[in-house]
Length: 239
Length: 179
Image (spheres, rainbow over the protein chains, first blue to last red):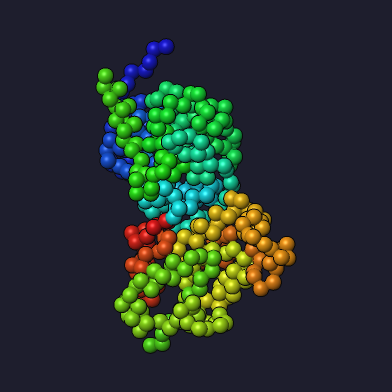
């Protein structure tokens, strides 16, 4: 198949005229121009899946809100990233993420270094707009170095993607649907018995919450180093 | 000028937020000029009074007594401030929800005890646990939310001053979940 030629497209984000490669996403162009759009499941270098919907934007002329991490740019489009309607929807999205599992920040190893917690602060969400569900999952602490607590998982799938796309092991995947969905190792086996896991720890470093953490680490020590992964991806691209 | 009638109450929490309240130190003297504490663990009022201007509630709703109290508070207060993560998210108290009330009672009154003469859960004198620990706003309307575990004294001071002066305070700069 012959690929379309990459061209430059011109459009507006928040009334600012911007240009980007025709194969770019709205989020990529916004980042290049220093325009902040909140994200959770997005991680530079990994594929974009639009799982969390935090990066939704408005397009003038359309009533739909679209995730900017997966939406490709179009000539002359006008994007709005920060309207009161978007803030209202982002607050509801965050509320639903908080309410679906049990994110007890005060007893979390990621307290103070959690992207979900930071998003709530940034957007001014001081309470959940929907009732808490508190669905209980068993914690997998079988691995000698790492722990997976599905109760703190936001199903962003960064761990699944980094394992598949960067480490190349694809030891992780998602089992189930909706509220019952959880990250599994191999065929839903204990982490310690996973034959495909290389124990590289990339999944732990890119996890935005305390769902994946190093065993024995304290809240001050468990600062995720997701830049290691993005630097690695960049270094491979430059080869 | 008459003083603002303020009540504080400690439901299912650790009292850390009330400790933070005391951590306002000398600013308490400044607040004492403006408010009357009409009901609180700090004072000896037995009955929750009527006509309260602001009630500051620490803790989640875990028992039928908590539920009865929050409804009474709502009825008798012009404004309610949910103070701390327990009041807003359920926090530690709500971790019980992962296992259920029955499992917690069994662990507390059977599994971890040397003896239990009656062979039953206590049913007199102690309030009945709800099926699920819930934050305040799942039972009644709440006017102000100030998260934190515990909420820092600076945040409590700024918010109370803001309420007294009828101005909005951006609490995200002062506190957050888990702080």
